[in-house]
Image (cartoon, rainbow, N blue to C red; front, top):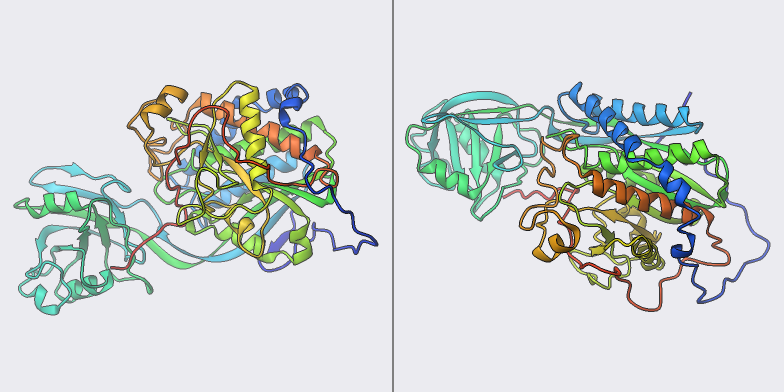
Length: 516
C-alpha cells in the first residue's frame, strides 16, 4: 500500500537531519566538467528512453481524459485516474511510491462550457479563444434572445431599465466589477450574462466568491462588437461550474540508491486545464519523466545522488501542488535538495528548444523573469552544452517561475532550478523558423489550454530531442560529486551555442483573472 502523506506534514521517506561533526569547504570556483565529455557515456541511457515509450504514456493519459469528460483537471476523476496510472507504472518499475495529499479550492468548469449563436446564423464558438467562463460563474443551460442594456456598462440599476426578462444580457466591461454587472442583470431578469472586453483580446474575469447563481462568461472585444451589431440575435450558453474544496495529490518516487543528503528533484505537473486533456501541457513532461524513471529502474543504474521524481497536482490553479510540497518540508529537508529540474511542455508542435534562462542574462529580473538562485545558470549551461554537443540549436526562455520550479526558487527557499520548454501561446518568429523549422507567425502550441491539446497535438521530432536532453541531464546530475563540484554559476553569461532567445509565451498557469 502506498503511504499517504497529508499536506503540511513531513514525508516519511525523507531522512531526519543529521548533525555533521565537521564542515566540508568546497573550492570556491571549481566548475563541474561539461556534459559534452559525457555524451558517449549517456548514449545507452538516452536511447533506452524512447519516444515510443513516452507516446505510450501520453496515449494512456488521453484515454483517461476521454473517459472523464475530456479533461484531467486536478480534483476530478480524470486527474485521480492519471495519478493512479503514474503510481501503478512506477510500482511496476520497482519504486516505492508516496502519495502526498492536500486540499485546495477547485474553482473551475466541471465540464467544458458551450457557447453558440442560434440565430440569425448558426455559429459555435471556441472555449479559450472566443470566450471563457468567469471564475465563480454559476451553472445553467440557457437559450434565449440577447439584449443589451440601456446603459452600456450596467453598473447602475437604471442601466437595466426595460430589460426583457428571460433574455441573455450583453454588457461591456468597465467602471465596476463583473459581479456588480451580473447582480444587476439578474435582478432585472437576465437568464445569463455576457461581458465583452473593452480592449483587444479575450476577457479572463472573476466574479470573486461566492459561487454566483447564473451563467456569466467573458468574450473578446471583437466578438462583443460583432454581437452588438447583430439584429435578431439568439444564443445558447451552457456552463457547468464548481467552487468547492477538493482533495488531490502529488505523486512521488525516489531512487533506492543515492545519497539522501544530496537530492535531485525531477518534476512535471500532471494536471490539465478544464478545457482539454492536456497531452502537451503537460502530458509531454509527465510522460517523459515517467519514461526516464522507468528506464533508470530497468537499468538498475548506480546513482551518487538520490533522484526524487515528482508529478505535481493543481499546477494549473496556481502551482498549488508544488507550493504545498515545498511548504511541507522542514529547513533541513529543503537543504538536502541540490537542485530542481522542471519539464513543462516539451512536445509543442511548432517547437523551439528553449532552456530556462537561469542566469537572467537574456531576460533580466523584472515582471516577467524571476531571480535565479546561485547555480541556476550552471544548470542552464549544462542543457545548452548538451544541445551544442549533439549539433542542435537552443535558445533561452524567461526564468519566470510560472511553473512548478517557482516555489523552489522563491526567496527564502533559493533552490537552484532549470528545465526545458518548447513554447506555448507565443508566436514563432521568422528567425526561429529558419533555425528550428516550423511555421513563422504561428503559436508554438496553437492548442495551448484548449480542447485540441490532444495526443495529436505533438511534434515527435521535438519531443524526441527534448527527452534525450532530459535523460542526459538527469543522469549527469545523478552522478555529480557536489562536494567536489558545488553548483556554482559560470563566470560569464550563459547562452545557447546557436539560435536565439524568444521567450515562448507566458505559459501562465497561475491564471491571471481580473474582477472588473
